[in-house]
Image (cartoon, helix red, strand yellow):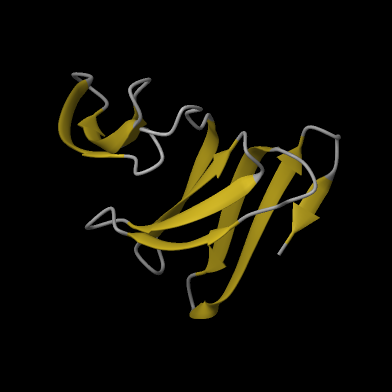
Length: 108
């Protein structure tokens, strides 16, 4: 399971025991204003995960190393809930959907 802490760390944890196995500091955690993570979604077909933030961003990470992959900034609104779907027969076919604080749904 992917976990996020109030101190700005994210990592892997065991959902049964609530013990965190491995964490990594969020590079933005030391800035005066910390980011709020509003949701995350796993992209299992390409071994990545996505975090949405209260700063109107989508951040993509490698699931195995937690290394940042890319970031989309400057969204018009705050993404609050995300869902990711992929076609198990075709890894190139996938959909990312998110709902925002202006009651809109975006599909990519």
